[in-house]
Length: 499
Image 1 (spheres, rainbow, N blue to C red):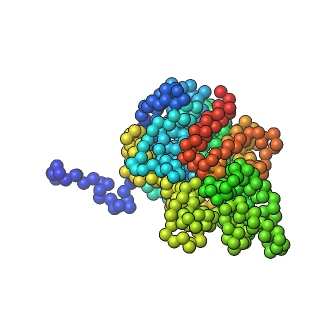
Image 2 (cartoon, one colour; image 1 turned 90 degrees about the horizontal axis):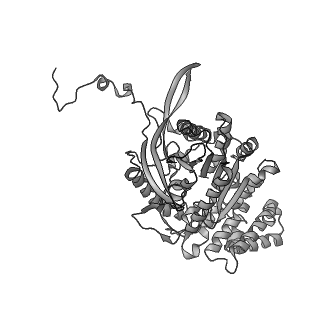
Image 3 (cartoon, helix red, strand yellow; image 1 turned 30 degrees about the vertical axis):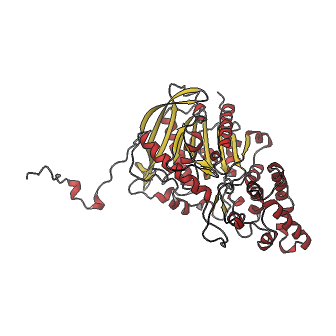
């Protein structure tokens, strides 16, 4: 029968019930664009490649090979220097944490060739926000590949697959590791110096990947960059019976109180040294004694904690010497009707009720998510030429709240053993660790505690370098720290690339 031009012809697929229709076969949708940037006085010509690549898995059904099945589409942005010799040119694979975070922070805050101007504590940028060339981009020293794990950014499970399968420790390692393998193979980079750069939970991922890539693919790395590290979760877990975090957070509390003028007439350096000594000695000893502690000893600890944290002796007495971190951020400036940031204690915010025990809102996160989200959504479309109607998931709360650590049932969650394994297996592997003094999410003293207990021979301890910055979790929000951190990362790659 004839068909009216305005009415589409009926196809066999149209007649199928919705559940019988076949999903379109997913394909890579990468877009490449050419750019120029000046970094360190050098004009660099580079190619930006952005879009989603399809992850496939070998599927067995009843013991029989059933093909490579598409499971997920992972969004990435790669920057490669034009006309560079692949064997000589390092490549860095970067991601953030959460879990459930996209790579937006390292991408537009520190490493990429373009960065967002977000302002800083006390001087936030106002919308609309500005993108500028990153004069300190790591692109001068390394190609860059930013990876958004499944359910973050534009990354999604394919139709018919369960995204929750990727919201867990092992599957996350496997999927990100597969992205790294695919990109390395497709771009002929197996003999390039290779690096991982992770922030926050991204350091958990990076430490696990260092061992996974070696074991699964025989891919040995030159270096791992751990920014705001969390390798042992027990150091951060204020669970009943675990007194360790109370001591490891103390120097960070001292730094934040000092920043807000509550501990005058002392330099930050002197104060931190004092807090670290107390946190490593008298304080844990006092907590370990429980109700056996003598009254005079307890009174001494109360006085010392008040002097180091800016909190009142009455408050410290009422919390039984144990200052929980969310409560600290709410209590410190209560008399000024302000809260302080968890990710960065330099930031302050407001609450509705100043009698609350602890706030769940972080003013340091609220200060930066707007500029970064606006910049990324503009940048990928207007400058990188990538179009997608999906929302860019800067941070997937669904993934975060349902993250699985089933592999650690009955155990402490740790990847310190994975990092130590990677170092013992590959004695050429170098590790760079960056910590902010005002980071109340992954405090620097907790990181020091973990690094000091790594099960590696003494001769390998020189493979690890640690840098500190007068800023928070995303230390590059602070301009002086950003510039110094960029120089530190460049020096790390230069010293470890063996080129």
